[in-house]
Length: 207
Image 1 (tube, one colour):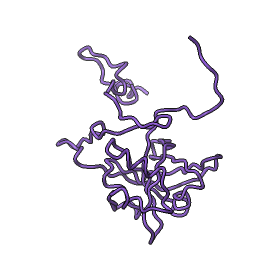
Image 2: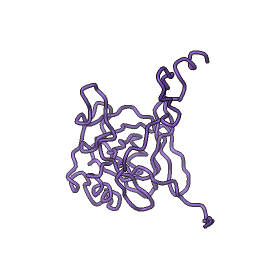
Image 3: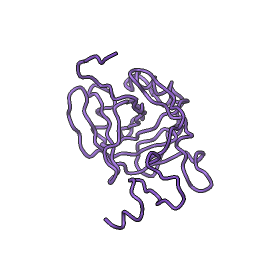
Image 4: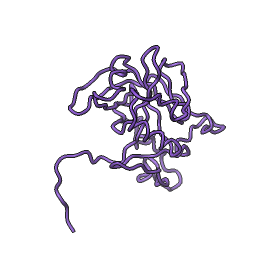
């Protein structure tokens, strides 16, 4: 057994397939399905989406400088796929897919109410890369479906049944394998509690 050498290509999979909503003032809202989306900064919270200039939503986002990233569940997979192959020039995607527009306090562009997590973004910069242009945006707010909140105020994202995209196919996310830092967590009594960055409270104080 060995390795084969291939020419450069996009093989960073799986990735989230997201439904991005956008809207010009006075016009119908649109949805574009994208696989090239990701986190780029924690503080301030920022993300990016990459869109082909020929897509109908490109000019809308470029003009309004805002959009909403809506996470996709297994129940939304068909709508996600349909919105990726049909154009907003020809269809009212909210209407065709029987999706509900959700108006938040963060911006006029509506989110998808059926999505468990809606991320409201303001474009800060546009990078022209080649086949796609990257919209670098700051997250100005988030709304979540309260049915996934527990009585302690914790949001259970793992229970929303999100799906992922890999090389032209959609997959339901599988079982939980661990949590951040589990590989270095000490099980003995009296061990120092680890923080999210892997440092104990004690060692952080020394820095």
